[in-house]
Image 1 (cartoon, rainbow, N blue to C red):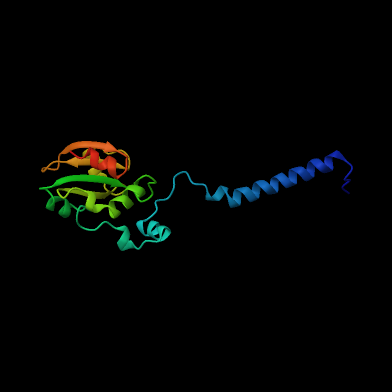
Image 2 (cartoon, rainbow, N blue to C red; image 1 turned 45 degrees about the vertical axis):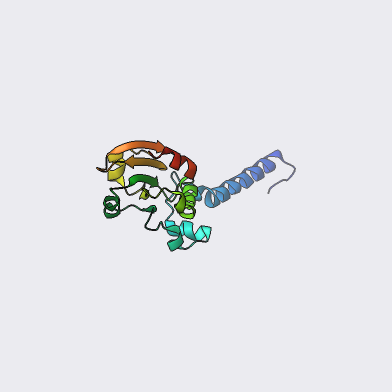
Length: 160
């Protein structure tokens, strides 16, 4: 029925092998491709890095989670909003530096870890268009300065 000496046999065999390889690729790799990465939670990052949720979350003090109450309570200090996203590859190193070096933040400065994905009103108010953005505000909550990127030394150098 099939003659291995005929050129058409080899063409058909090659087409079958390539077709199977394409199906394998589609089902193993193609299905895992996404247009946008799904957000990673702080818990997932903590599990991947070997830290606990408590170690991963900013404590009250010079570096803390943003909340309207905490933000207002620090009105007499220099306040900086750090628009952080748990999926952001440049936000994570700074977050770790801030946790490990909180004592390097001046005593009259509070840096608020502000969730980039859910803080839409704050992003709109201050004109924030992407994560790893910093906004320093005055006593009334008005923007003094805005900048992007950097690690701890850059952050500290930019605070007025």
